[in-house]
Image 1: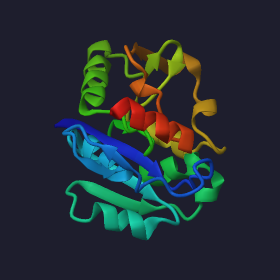
Image 2: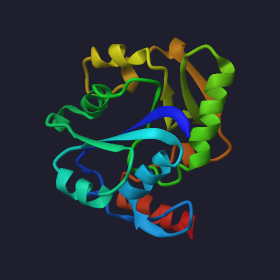
Image 3: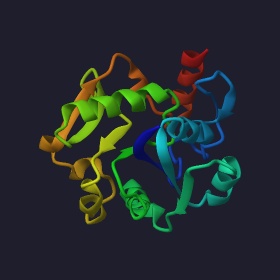
Image 4: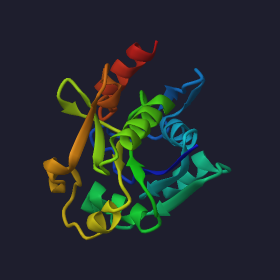
Length: 197
């Protein structure tokens, strides 16, 4: 078990998908069909010491999908319409150490992603933000040293990425699209079904 938290923002409105995507069936690492949200949470919990899941107006559904999971803390973001940064900030009010951030809608992220990133993070020893990268495109999960908690809590805006100083980032090049593949649209979900077989 890695001594690191995982923040999962899940308070978005799935506007590009047309309906909430948390219940869409995906394949887990073990090959079973599970709801997208549950898959993301279980994968994080398989390696991280805890997961902090941020819910919005689907809070009831989220609680229903994740009932009984140990080391999961669900918090609500009443300001979800302000953007993902507000959800990350809500989670960080209860996170104390180093932490990953991973969106709910990346079904190809596996335990190995977290393990490889955390090992590389420790090996580098420079305590900078670490992101996976595929063919020049930045991906997830993103690993932050604990010292960024206060800095992020004091940020203003809708998204975190534009507020980060590029000089504070390190990258781990990845061999496939798993770190950048998200399910924002019905077309992306159809592509996922083809990829996953």
